[in-house]
Length: 382
Picture 1 (cartoon, rainbow, N blue to C red):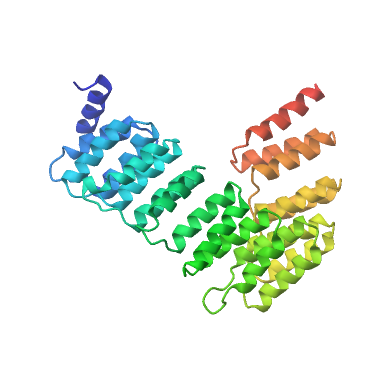
Picture 2: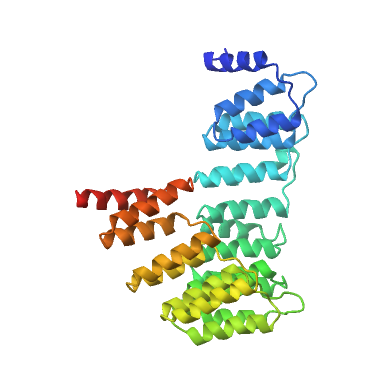
């Protein structure tokens, strides 16, 4: 029997006189994807309308909505309805596997993969990769590795398969396993692509093995796989953390010599490296170079500089940089929190409130941390 809330929704939809179409239903379901049962009731109502049939996208959206609120039984009923219409595909199962994995229902995710055949969708490499990705992203890389080892003869791994496992072990973190996966990939004749190289460089750098990461970059065949700005940004950033400023600069120059155009992430890494060794003149030169080359700084660019200046006690200069910033890009929550905290610590509550008012003028929603900083100092002031 239909619940009163469902009946009320049905009545409201009928009285609205809306004529459903694929686009309207997809848009409404997307808008209410976090509303769970409301999305499902609309989906159910729309299905009963004349001259209308749900699209694959509509089915997928409502499956995601139901999984978010753990209405798994209803989710499987929707899947059965999809099967009856011959609309189930590999992506359908990838969605369900992702949702189960995020809810730490690992066995259910694996079960979903294993019953694909029953829904007339033979599992393929894309589905296999989808399962491994779902498990790795939900911090279940060991289970992913176990499944990979048991099924790699059934599905020939590609560069995406290895990249998924590589990233999973990198985030674990387990550098020996990441190295093992990379060696296995190369040993099996699977050529790493730019994504694989990027992940491996990132994993090595986060483990403090920047020189080993550079060796990986030097091994890349530039004719097939040229290093990206992301790879160089990781190298420059890591050299900066290690106070190896000359290596950071040389890596940046090498990138330019190789004809790779620096993006804002690479410049941010270089700025961070100069800030780490207190070379502020170089920081401003980099900012000017960005301006000349048409690379627009972002909030991250200025936050790196502000953090360095505030840490050194150069608060007046930090305020000048902040005023320069608001002419170029929008501050973010970290920016406002840093500036408000800086003024509060200097007992300049009026200027802190001025930044707060500017934030409100820009209709920026402050973070809880920003609130806490201002409230704390306001109470101390009495």
